[in-house]
Length: 129
Image (cartoon, rainbow, N blue to C red; front, side, top):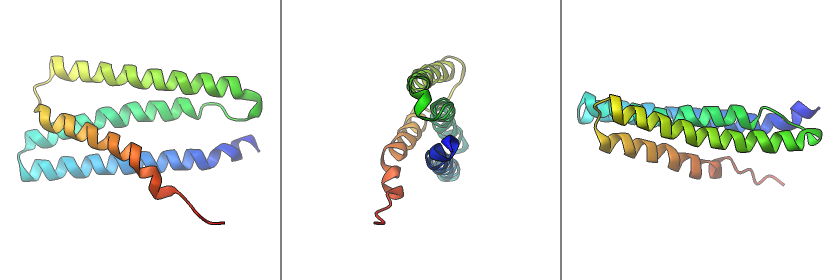
């Protein structure tokens, strides 16, 4: 019963991750064809950073469920958010230090994925009464 209560949230999280991943791949392919392959690769890396960090957060956020595990739910949610920020910083640091990528598509695709994460839940609002 407890897992059934968390199922709609897990489904929504999976849908969000698929939408973000699809948008990142679409933008990367589009920029790779329209501008040059370097822009496409940088775009894929920038969006990939956000998607990877968001997957880690979703795993941590849905690790526990139920009213009896409220402290564990809250702790895993906050730990997931902290881990998401840490992974984002770490991946951006690795990209800046060890890779030669175009910065404009890298940052723009990261911001696109972030914007999708902010505004896409509006698409899932269900006003059935």
